[in-house]
Length: 234
Image (cartoon, rainbow, N blue to C red; front, top):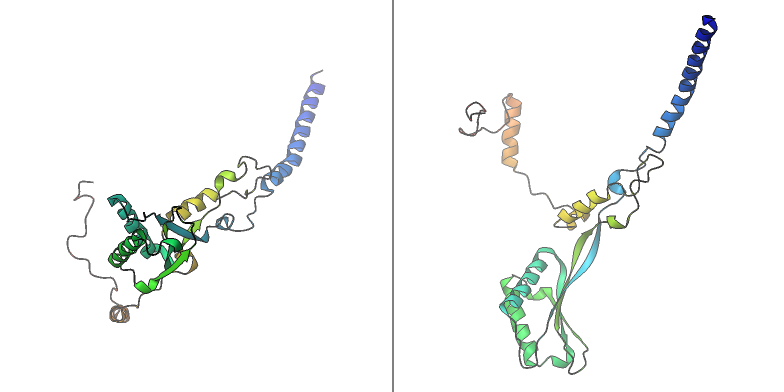
């Protein structure tokens, strides 16, 4: 009476083992599906370089220019930003109906003085005029072009938790690219890197002579730059 029960248990164990052997490759195939990355992750959400226009408006009254110390500091900051990141000339547009007004004349004198202090050459300035109705506030407009590092807006992307294919989503790496774009101070480096300086030919010859002689090519370390952890109390 005990032998049929033992045979039934052995049979159920064989069926379970066979089912596991058949299902294991299917489970592994499901995990591997869609895991291939077709392109590097930094190309999924690349940092782009776009041209931007920086603009500053100086409102002057017909009887003269009235700027506070903070306003004048804002003009200085704007001109320093142009020397650091500006591309091309700096543009000064004046209202056509107030060219001979006391306010525009004083504004021109202020800009001439501050641009000279910021080492901006006169040939880097392009002047223009624009139409404005008499009586309406018409500022003197300063502007220049610059380049900005722009990343994709990660807040507008889809849900990262929806990964049914167990693969790389289009949003992967978006925040890393956004952080990189925020840290780039000069986007022109993304277009063309800085030129390398001329190498030191004398130093190169010294290193080459030591290499031919079989001696160390490393520079001599001055005394006091070698510190041991035991001497430092570590």
